[in-house]
Image 1 (spheres, rainbow, N blue to C red):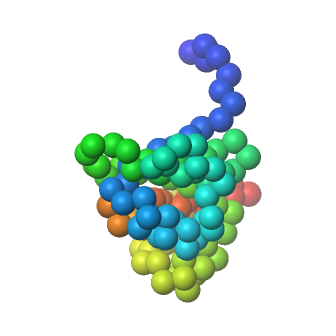
Image 2: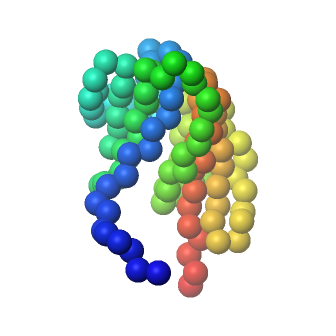
Length: 118
């Protein structure tokens, strides 16, 4: 099936209950947010056309998930551990390597590295 239109960017939104706590947690590995589009929100540009947004304006926070592609999963995992952020073991899925971590609200962040098909 043909795509109806071309897309140009992606914003993945994770709801959080406490923006200050979330900024501390995400800031430990992303640094300061690139944007604060409005009160109760913060955004990081994580790739050329991809953003991760935290939203503390929702009445109810239900954990969700985001998958972030990386070039060197082992190095990313080591950096997170050295920053004091709990992260799971690396899993080998034959086509991709991944590991998971959870923010204070239970949002699941999976880091994934495509395994070269050489």
